[in-house]
Length: 324
Image (cartoon, rainbow, N blue to C red; front, side, top):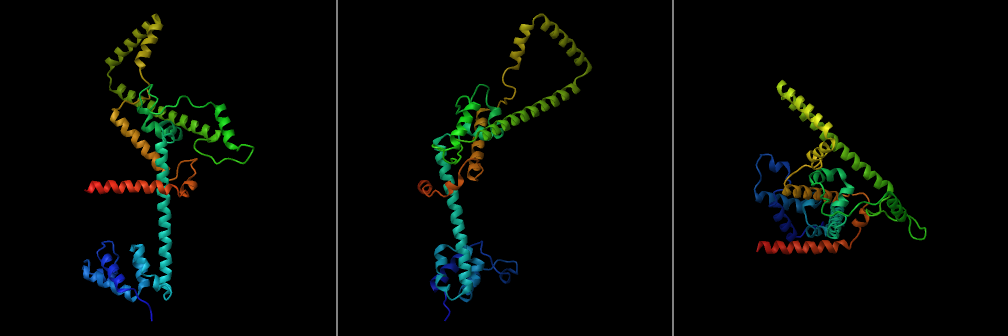
């Protein structure tokens, strides 16, 4: 005699799924264009569970929980279809668990780095993403403000070469040491500096192009009388500069003022931009896009699960007290 699900399992599964708005229904129940009643949905589920549990698993197995799937275990030996779809669902659950573990472990490791403070410091993020840093932070920073985590001048080429050599071999002439973000090779460091230089030049060129367009627009609006007056004024300034070049140089420096690349915005907006830049860098880390980070080791580090479990416990506790 072919085995069937227990009546308790049938009632539980059909009751729960009948109330689920995401339940996928066959065409004969929806051909009128109206949603069937809860009673009809429940009847459809019960009949399918008892008549053809393999087809039920094919259609609705991904909506079942672990305990609900366990109710199908006694049917596997006598039904090829049930066994087949149970294996598929188990593989999906295993993959889902692996994906969840990977995300949680990366998040836990990122939180460690945030607490440690170096990897996500302003200087370190600027080194890794100079163009993004300038777009969100650098161009709005007042001249002379080195940022919240300035670490002094960077290492010289000789120091970087020595560091690369030291990190390229183990003590005693062994094999290569796994690269970390703190010990990159000289070529990578030079490439980042080149990218930063190119980014700054591109920003400056765009600013100059914008300034030229502004000047051309203003000059078109000037009438002949203003142009003649401007010409006479330039002549007078030229004579004054020839008579007192030193004083003219001081005046020129005073007019130039702050760094021309600096854009003034309110402090609150500067902080919002800095927070947005940090969020981008955190997302890049979680997506596995940070070069020099050993994501394989992080994803396989089960000790990070303790960090995540502790954080999840705190979040659940906060949610509990918030609801009270």
